[in-house]
Image 1 (cartoon, rainbow, N blue to C red):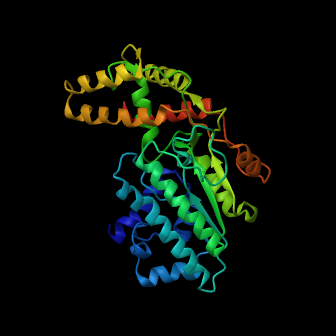
Image 2: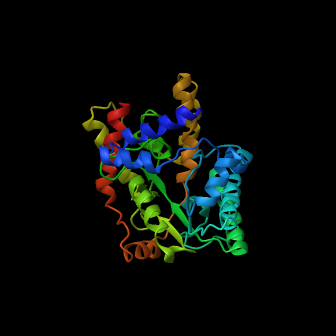
Image 3: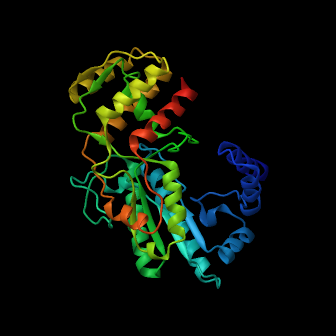
Amino acid sequence: ESHQKVESRLEDLIQFWEMNEKQAIDARQRVIPLRGDTNQESFALSAENYGMIAKECTHVIHCAGVVRMNLPIEEARQHAVKATQNIVKLALACKTANNPLMKIEFVSTVGVGGCLPSILEETWVITPREYHNTYEQAKAEAEDYLKEQIQLHHLPVTVHRPSMVVGDSKTGKIIHFQVFYHICEFLSGRRSFGLLPFFGEMRLDTVPVDYVAEVLRWSSLQPNSEGKILHICSGANEAIKLTELQKLIRETMMQNKTPLPRLKSLPVSLFTFLLKIISFFMANKSKRALKTVPVFLNYLKDYQGFDSQKSKLTIECSNGPILSDKNIYLDKVLGYYLQRTV
């Protein structure tokens, strides 16, 4: 990207978030957009720009990432582990430049728990485990590396583990329709002619993007959050059941006059078999969409619970943000999505 395009991205964000004139002026004065790549050495920045950051930066928020579940493992590692290595190098450069590096907010994922059979606790994960996909594995390896570096260099890090990030809790807005929205299409039955596996008690933990952003901002100003692992999620008991989410999705779609097939619940093995047959009779675009279904099904098949009691207590007791009710924000999120895609 050219420097001009990077500048225009800031303007696009100002417009997307509908900042008022005062907020827009403040953003243009405070934000210095730089063209770089977290996967590359020194973020592919010039020596001058990298040196400026090392000299002046006191807070780092690392939330760059590629949320694709089925990348080859080496490519997934490049996005997760390599980027983490570069963040650590920047932190060390800050510490050696007579700069009082105060805080690093590192965004990981609750997915680092992989296929653990128990609830993921708010601690480092040392239990050997398998993973649902290469995204989870690479993020877990990045956490392992970060843990070593924190102990070795005494880095002031807070690790944040969000669950499935969805749109803004008040407006439903989000920049990119990623994994959650593909799962919604799957749950609606539109991609499989109404044929779906039996979901039983399966749940999906979601969290609105504005809550994640507020927790990161809050944590960056809280010295007592250093060294903690915060789960930014609904929690094991509050995550929505897939059957409830499916009902909400279909009700919202019907309100938007979206055509929906009748649903037929099947055993997972039979559903997977029929999926392969159905794909032979579909157009290429629909076939590509259908290929993502087994990825989501593999992700959703196991019980996944994430403890968040300590995190919520830590955040709320220090005047941090409060997570809004899922039934309210999911209605906003789905409405925003359907208004722009149907």
